[in-house]
Image 1 (cartoon, helix red, strand yellow):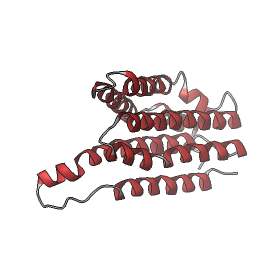
Image 2 (cartoon, helix red, strand yellow):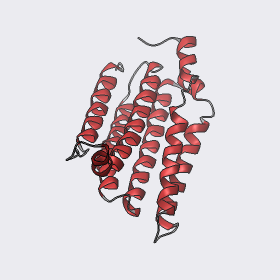
Image 3 (cartoon, helix red, strand yellow):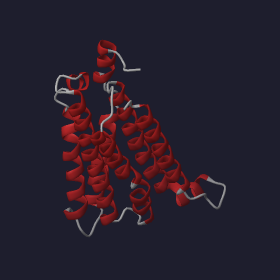
Image 4 (spheres, one colour):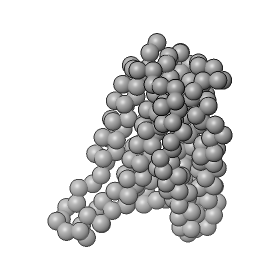
Length: 204
């Protein structure tokens, strides 16, 4: 099976996820910046962070399938697993905002990010398995340092929110910093797959 249907379906799901998240934002009752900050401020920040994460996954998903020439049953199921994890982001983002960044919603948001990262790793592994250990994607990924350190930061954030300063906000602040740091790491363009596409050519 070619990759076009999988990519089109995934693009549609990710677009719906972003749409749901933006619809969760509260419209200010007044007409001033203070009204915006009071009604929507933290919710807008949460939305931006989650939007960036969805954008990162869309970008990397697109790049990965530029080097994929066929889709197996394992790839299809792994892709559905990733989309399921990402589809939970509107819920975990909304709860984190509604709770005013309470400890457990922040922990759950981190768990959501962690399982999405694991799901992406499984999808990547399935794509490589379908194309062989010498495939262009496997060569492009290399040591995958960013992929390895991201779950570590998620875990640090989750544990910090849960156990650091249980009666204050320090743990939540550390967790938010970890989640933002991972997003910043992945926002920086990764040229490995771009170079591989130039070297080996896109399947299209």
